[in-house]
Image 1 (tube, rainbow, N blue to C red):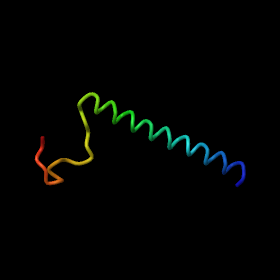
Image 2: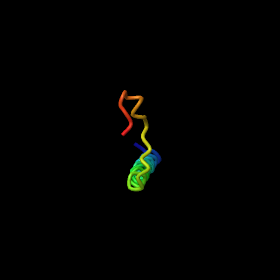
Image 3: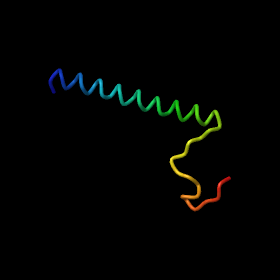
Length: 50
């Protein structure tokens, strides 16, 4: 692996980690505020809304 590839993968890994942390923070803040934003609805799963 040359220097350019090493730098690319290092930056890509940092970017992906930051993105993952951001998603976790948004989900945590949303849940803490009580406004959970599901990716599906209960009715789509054949369940009654609570």
